[in-house]
Length: 471
Picture 1 (tube, rainbow, N blue to C red):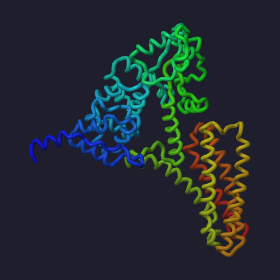
Picture 2 (cartoon, rainbow, N blue to C red):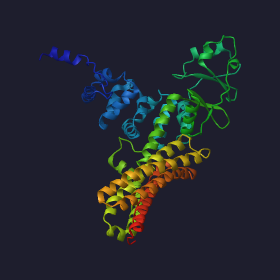
Picture 3 (tube, rainbow, N blue to C red):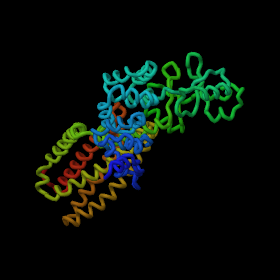
Picture 4 (cartoon, rainbow, N blue to C red):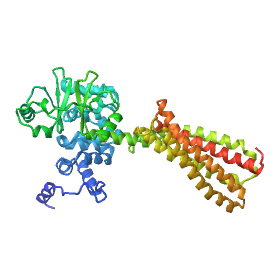
């Protein structure tokens, strides 16, 4: 190939490749092209491929790349890399990326972000790393971010955006519109402006649509609404999300303990909170803590081991119950065959009730006002399902072992265990919540223990009495 031909190839543009395939996964050809550009340090080629990606797509791409390629990807994109993408990736990946980047580069990238996104990225770092990055920022930005980081974890103060528009009560609509046109440090997107007194105490808010429909000489106070849903900065983010859902809010002012305006929460932040809380509860129910798909082997192993050890203790307790009826089982081997059925049915029924109860507690749909009604409902459901399953399993046991008495025994045990499963699945989460223990984390262990112990004891005890077997 001639030298001219080689130059033409080198200068040829990178072909356009779809970012995602028909299944909405990242396109393999696209990933391969990005990896090739990183390997050859092809800055222009990489920018052609990835500079205009949405931050969500950039986040997915970062998670897909090999760990050693992620910092190079950011370095090659340079000013075209949107650090908002770091809010779209797992914590483990984000920490690895930040560890591989120079402090001044991180600070420069965070300086371009809204304060809520910058805090989200910083809050998982240790205090020394936070301090080093904050030191590289201008004083005003540093003070703003440090104040947000000083609020408790998972609070409204950590999620709020400190960029907002606040005006004096004596301003007119015309002054407000002119200010919004001329100011350079406005938020990227906003839905309402806030009215504050000279001490920055929140007086009310005005939606943008009202501003656009009002004459210029009117004062903002003439169309101002009192802010009834202001959020306290120290309030838990889950409570705030519930308020957004209940009142269909798009944004909400955030105030400090003196009712002074300190930030604003928008619905896009709350959607993230709702997703995080739902994922947290789902993982807790399975006993995997805050495990993420990008975590390494040792992190996952340690996360799961604790609850496996707890489950081991409950399994030993169930085994102790079985040991009490050792002579009974020896006298009738069929009991050993049927025991797992009783325990399994009780465990499944208990998990069903527990899942509904945990969700009801999380959404505040289950409380003292309706506990009795829900309890009565669960008793009736448990009895109905218990009788239905008792008939089905009892007939099966009768035909299997040719013993109608055995069918009666297992049927009775099923009814008893399902009743206890329903009660424990409802009452245990409520009791744990009352003593400030997260029911999503601890309920499953206790519910499983109750259904195993009650199931084995009921089945073997009824069998010993019915057939006159030794204890």
